[in-house]
Image 1 (tube, rainbow, N blue to C red):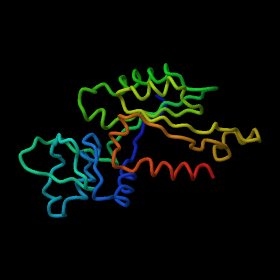
Image 2: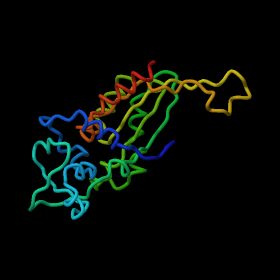
Image 3: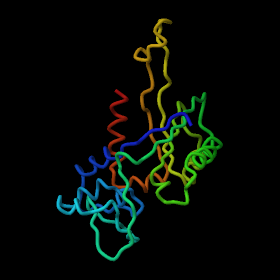
Image 4: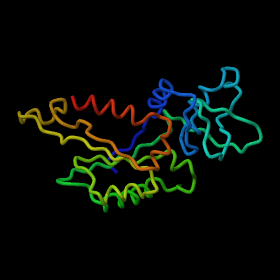
Length: 212
């Protein structure tokens, strides 16, 4: 694992609120069903102060279609997750001459299992995403493998970094070129978890900005 940090999904949730439609349905697997930010958005201030960080467990075919979360009595509770503070990002970087192979995707499962040992607990899968950052695209076989994988994987492509012309500027990273974002692809596990975040909308805006 090359990098380990946090992924602030509250940024995407705030975008969701701006484009929210009352008719929008959100998957029961979405992190919005566990998000403390969504609960706080739904509850009035007096209710927030008396509400512990738990969320009612509803297993209906579709979850709340409102931007926040409503609760009802008599249901089993689950701990809430902070979209801003609780989502972990495990990052693996690959500089390849051609394309990322299916074997590399399979290796990510082993890396994920090592760094996220308690996968029997649902919160572990919900809170830990693995990012594969590469200078090359996926092979068709690798794309199939990524789609079949049961862990949340985000595949990111970037332009190759280029050294400065002057040798004495090599250690000044402000003088380097490249590194722009060129593509983002994620599997169904991620798609379910970020359902309702308007993720693709925001990423498309970012990609257009990087292409200028």
